[in-house]
Image (cartoon, rainbow, N blue to C red; front, side, top):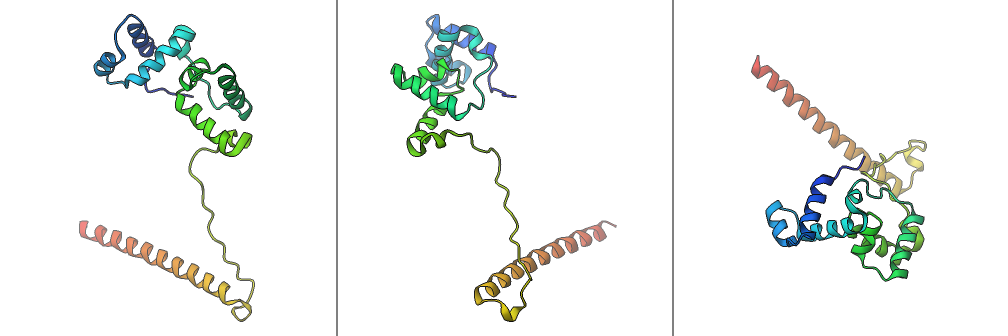
Length: 170
């Protein structure tokens, strides 16, 4: 579920005050919200009304991203206006899509995996005896074994430190 830093009611209130003549800079200082953000909320409010803040477009497909970019080009809209029209969370997303499309074409618009990349442990196969291994294979195995040995030594040192702290408390 999408969780915004600001509530929809707060966004509506600031957009309405700005439309009533208060400057975004004054509101920015009063509520500690960037004035650019307030102006973007005013655009969304002007296009969609108070319901514009309810659910922004989430995880669009490459096809959807492409159609939004096409609409922007066809109509000559700015990043801000296009983002507000399609209820994107910010114009920065649209700029990123545009850059990805320019660099990689349609494949650049495909959704990317989120989160941390899981690194696989290097596997050392002991299928060959040492006499049959190449020098490169021997060096790789030596490096792996040295690393493994260092990790085990650290673990042992930590366990020993923990045991000695336990004895001091007793």
